[in-house]
Length: 502
Image 1 (spheres, rainbow, N blue to C red):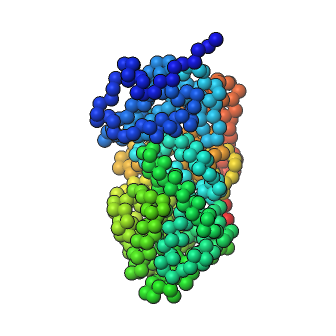
Image 2 (cartoon, one colour):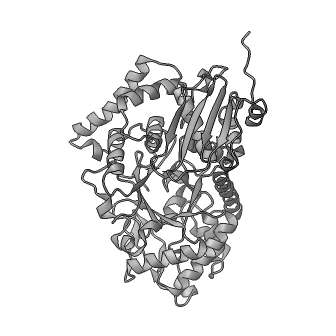
Image 3 (cartoon, rainbow, N blue to C red):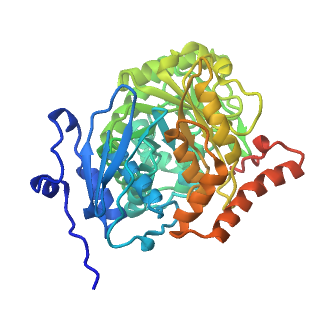
């Protein structure tokens, strides 16, 4: 009868002298959140891992894996990075936990000894989730689903996550201080599946009304998400305030300067309170105060002024951007303003008005066009190499992986590069495990990825067994996207579909 390995935690291994105790300097964070996540992810094998905490060097995050059969040691620079080390070990051992699915049933009872290895993050920003994900994929997730999502993102190396869940609650509380009744605001706030486009200032008052109970429950869930991300050493990226107001705001608040925003694909857009208006600072203060109370705080806030055709009217966009940053600084001094690089966003006036070291642009078009020069276009503003491989919540498999595997390294290493991250931005998640895996790994490879070898390894870990047929199938899927693009007369770099957002 095969004996099961003895499940030993870190303290037991230290007591038996099987590991050297880490130095005081190394004990820079609590590994327990990572241990708890590991117990959820690999419950039958969690006791065979030992975590060693390490301070983050100036070069950035890293993890290292070593050990013996049944005694795997992972050291890393945050709880999430420890989990990333586990994820890489599992893939090298021939199994995978992906989004969706896993091949854990292929693990032997005793984990195999690793060939020691170390991976260093080549960029500090490893961002996940599009504004629209909570609409297309997550409007009705419960805590179990969110917990799984966070664990999977940590396992794959992400350290910054956009959090929309509960974002309506600060608006609901704040505008009751500016002349609106609770009932009016509940009619203005869309139902959960449509809230992403309301937060982008594209629409309001659709698929509702929402209820007090729903708003409170979503805020409580959002707080759980934020707290868990903090526990794992990840950064929750929260929606910031840039001026969205309900109808009639100027009538109820004399002196407010409000700019109508027109229509967006058939919906009336919410009005924009000019950040140059004296009332703006008061509204922003109320918004951020309630956001901290309900959801918690962060060091990164995402805001896209005048998104997809927004109208500045007579408001100077540069002055508006300075007003937005001033209000953000009052609430979260030194916080990073995150913007989506998409179509005409961010506007040149914003880039010119805001100190570049205070911004991070998530480039949603990195793999879509040739001839891009982000350093020139964004004047040295730090940006993340991003991809939107899925539009409109579609369930098809396909991404411009050939572009990712070469262009990311080219852009990162060119003279004067401002590339500081990766951004995985599908409009809907959980449908394309290969694209998810490869996008995540970009941040941990020092050079270009050999796609043929990578997809063969992916097929082996995806199914937990080496299979020539599986490897050939994934190779065919990889190559088919390039062939389809060429058949349409398009470059593989311009093969994305237009967004379907309504």
